[in-house]
Length: 97
Image (cartoon, rainbow, N blue to C red; front, side, top):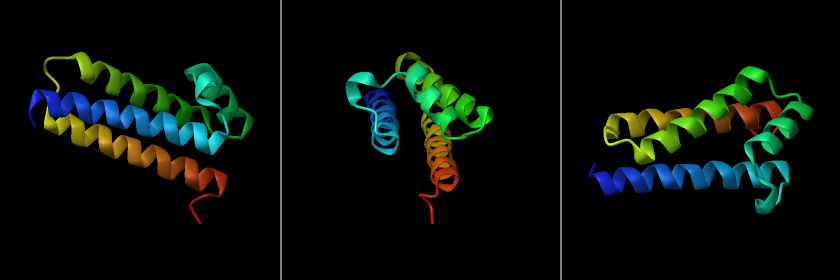
């Protein structure tokens, strides 16, 4: 992947995650923040390790957008982490049935 493609990929993953969380948790875009999302996830019984995984995923995406060493391999890993996070939330909230 070219550098600009990698940047765009990470930007789109971030948009997808935040959009998913806003829709799933009924949080308006203006109120979406790590703290608000973490609080709502805890209130819904999502385990702390899953919430920590979200934080790590967001950190990875944000870091990769600005890190000159980000690669296609790293992008694939982030994609898999994002997919796994969404599957976990869907299964935990009954949305994955």
